[in-house]
Amino acid sequence: MRRLTVAFAVALCAVGLAGRASAASLGLAEVRGADGQLLARADEGSFVDRSDGGWSLRIGSATTRPGFVDLRDVTMLGGRVWAARVVVPAHGLTGARVDHLVVDGKPRDAKPNTLIPLGQGSYVVVLQEAVVPGLGPSANGVVGLRVAVGDGRQILVGLARAAARPAPHKAAHLPWLTLGVGSGTLPSTPEPVPTFGTVPFDAGPAGPTGVKAVMIAERYLGIPYVWGGADPSVGFDCSGLMMYVYAQLGISLPHFAGYQWYSGKHVAPSALQPGDLVFFEPRANGPGHVGMYVGGGDFVQAPHTGDVVRISSLREAAYALTYVGAVRPY
Image 1 (cartoon, rainbow, N blue to C red):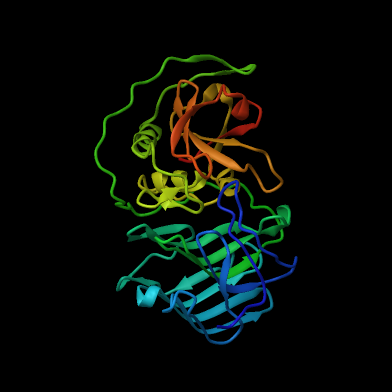
Image 2: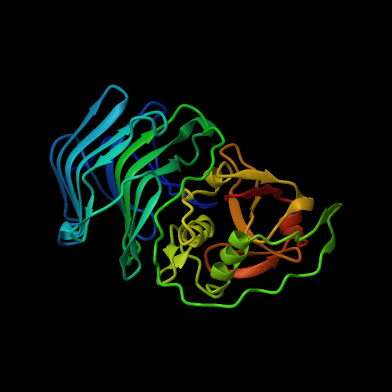
C-alpha cells in the first residue's frame, strides 16, 4: 500500500476530519474510515488501495502539475464507478472536470455537486466544494470525486485547496433525481410567530418549492445523524440533509454548510418562508451548521453525532445566540 503527500479532509458540517495539509499543497487521493481515520493515501503514479482486504480504489496514473492535480483511469468500488480523467485545480472550480464518468455501466453527468445514488447507503458526489479544517478561510477547495460507502468509508479522489472564499452564486440545477421519496401531504401553514429574541419572525407566504422541500425533509424525522451522511438508509449530517432534499427538487447544493451559505438569496428574519435554509455558528469559513425553516419559528435539522433528524425552535437559546442568517436556494 502506497502513501501520499498531503492530508486533505472534507468538512461537511460542523464536524471536520482531523488531517494535516500545508498551505500550498495539492493532494491526489485518500481513503478514510467511518471514524475519519486515514486508511490509504495515493502517491504520484499508479495506485491500488487494499485497505479493505480487496480494493476500493485504483488509479492508472496520478500527477501534480503547476496548479493542478491530474488523474487518469480512476476506478472505484470494484468497477462500479469509473472516470477516464479527473482534473482538479488549486483555486476554485475553474478548469475542474471529470471526463467520461460511468456509474454502474451508465454514462453520468459530471457537473459540480452532482449527487449519484449507488444504493445501500452509498453515493457519489462529483466536483464537490470542500474545505480543509483548521486552515482558515483560505483553505477552500474542491474534491474531484467523493464516494461515500454504506459502511461509512469515504473515498476522496483529486484534492486541492483554493486561495479565497467563494463568491456568492445561485444554485445550479440538476436533472430530476429519484431517490426513494414517497408521497406525502402538504403541511399546514403555521401562525406567525411574534418574536425570536428581539427580531420578529413570520412564516410568510409559502411558495411551492419551499413547501415541497419541507414535505420531503419531514419524512426523515428520526433518521440518525451520521457525519458525511446524505442518504436516509445511512443517515444525514446537517448539510447532507439539505443537499439530499433539494436534489429531489432539481436544485444542487454543495455538501458543506459554509458553502450552502452562498447558494442563494439571503433572507431577512422577517421574510423567512418554509424551505429557507437557516444558518448558525459563525466561523471564518462560513456558518458551521444549517437547518431548514418549516414555519412557526421552527426548523428541521440533523444536529450532531448521537442525535437524530428533528424539529427544533429558533427561540431555543443555543440557536438564538448563534443564528447567522438565512438563504433561499431557489
